[in-house]
Image (cartoon, rainbow, N blue to C red; front, side):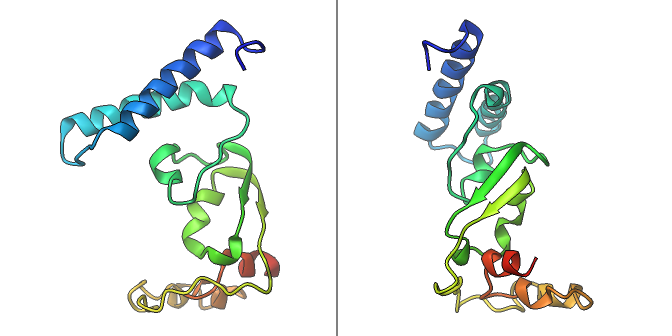
Length: 149
């Protein structure tokens, strides 16, 4: 990377790496001003360096912590093991202009027996006219939904 990048890119990426290290190594309480400041600094550093890194790899649970909530932030978002993901990954997908949803039709879907549709505010009641209504209920995967599209 250092051989093929500009001094600006190297400096930006080094600042981001330092900030990422600070964020990961500190135990930050959400109710402290320090946590807010560190988060703001991290997001500013991320926004500066995103143009220099063509590919980001992280779990769907890390996305809200590490990526800005912008539509079309990336050209492509890939969801691997989509058979194990429910509709909670929709905010992840919305960060991409295009999606690649990879899963296994023979793999069981996401199962959270301790969570009921009622506890999830029954998303089906708001989708009464949608042909995809059943895909949004618990136990169904984003892979199932993509297969219907």
